[in-house]
Length: 261
Image (cartoon, helix red, strand yellow):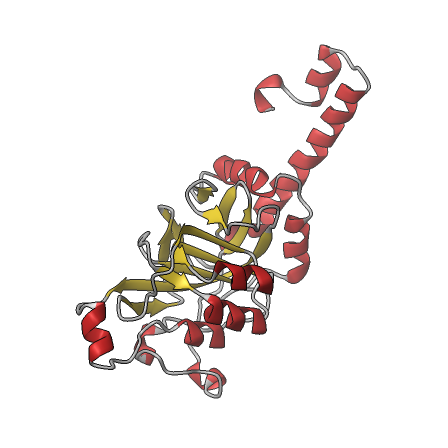
């Protein structure tokens, strides 16, 4: 768990909140965040998520999600991101969408309130239990962009693909769909524990994402993971240099045992 205990201070954000859901569903507002300089060092890694996944394996942490499961937005291949996680968890509404529309019921989606308590450089992470409905569309992505968020991850669907692409904010999702989440789901917790691709994610975790997949690094392990990744990158660079220079098997094994490649 955290070295820093997350706190809740809604008064700090009173002029930004939209009050889409009961404030008791906001679990915390003051979460631990990784320093920008550290985030930039992660982004400088080649094979970002592969390197991080290997480091997490070494530390005994199951926190990687395949890019074939939670996929980059169509047309956004080649993008990568890293940032501290803010989380939103949805559960199905008890009434039908038709009933919600017919009764002019208030939408309970609450992404606006999560953005209100986020900070520049955060990554918006949504747990929809894999539902093929949209957890982020053009308007939500526009607000995420306005608040300076570094990326969007939805274990569910996104829509308005062209608009999100035009905004330039990197996004990953399980589905692409035109179906809205309004009157189909409600936000049950903001900045609480969520599940993405079968992996537990906590607010304040560091999300790294690229075409290969996503990893969620527990906040208290960020420095250790970076240390492992940078050391591995240095060894691999030396090994590549030996290969390019026509070095012998013995020269290559002197850099790194064959079972570690």
